[in-house]
Length: 144
Length: 361
Image (cartoon, rainbow over all chains, first blue to last red; front, side, top):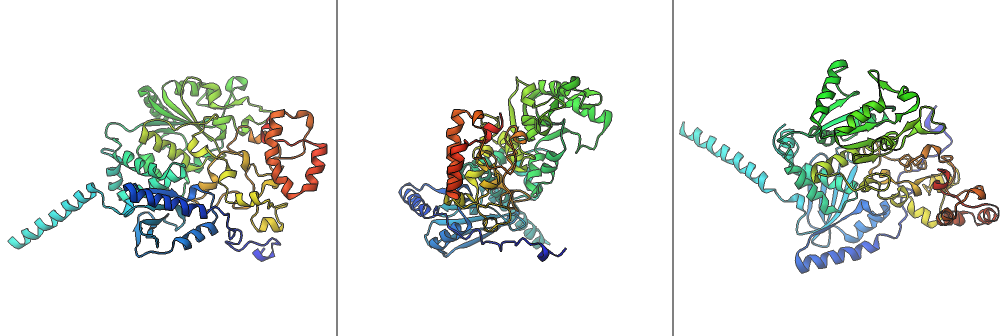
């Protein structure tokens, strides 16, 4: 039986989620408060957007309000993650995707730079080892 | 398997950032604050697994293997299975290569060492001296008591092990009971669901590895991280409930518009589970998103709790009502009043409201 012979219509995607719940505007105040704390004592903080009852339309609205900033970072680690600064410097929109491209988790972070972007010292040590190995190889080649 | 977890992961090609990303998502799924993701990543990355991997024994009793299917077919196997690499799964009948005496020997060696984590799926039949379900001629009851005696903690996986499950449904011909009905002297974590969500078991293991303890439990022995809120509270259709927009049948305008399924029998308001946030099949969808109400499969006795398609607040026999339940039912009744004031008035004069709790009696 062809799909269109079934007398029940599939809803085009997004139709049921285009209504805003009214929960998003309050988040702007929370982010403002987070920024004030960050300015006062450097305290970084984050909001887990999936922990809140927000519809896709709410998220879209919030994203529009915060706007796009100058920096957009892409992390390729078991699926793509984007860490984008919003039009408000210090406010980052972080989206983690799985290898299939589905969104795993989504956060708003208030920080100079999201933690995930920074290189970890132990990894830097490994990188330095690698570099020293390259240099010693090069100097050996020069000896010959 | 030597060195901290992060080094083991690095050898498998998993970078620190990949791991931190995974922990951020895991913390989000566990409804922990975002800062916990970082703490978890740091603790787990450093977790010394150099000495000895924690031993895990997994015993299947009166079950359908659906729980094992759920875990082993988890859609993001890379990291979740790596978490499993951190433990030593010493006995699992469905997954182990060994059989017969070799398998039994592995089990006995693990049990002799003691201090293992015991995972149980399936209920334990007590009827006919446990004859309804035996492995190698020994009853489930006998096996459970023996394995539980040396366990550090027990994870009752799925609604059968946690609450007796479908075998326990009336009239319960085999006399099936839950793990906690048999074992009284060990810490037990219930991970109910039919089946449970794969990441919940990973989450409990991650918690065990990170903090060295079992997560905080609710009154039914379930980890609050995953079972702390109702399906209804985290449901993306919740705004429609609040606006009084309900689907009346499975093919009406409301159903097509994705409105609330409360009147079609959704048990979301009384069911504690993480489906609404974690979803199923690798985050593809979950029952309500697919247009069907929640059955309440992670709640005790959901199988005997009245019809799956009966709204929580329905006319019931007033003689059966408890006064406390009337108050609880009144809250749920608000939704119906939005949808059909006339029906509610008629119902109020002739009937009382009821909740899942009443249906369970």
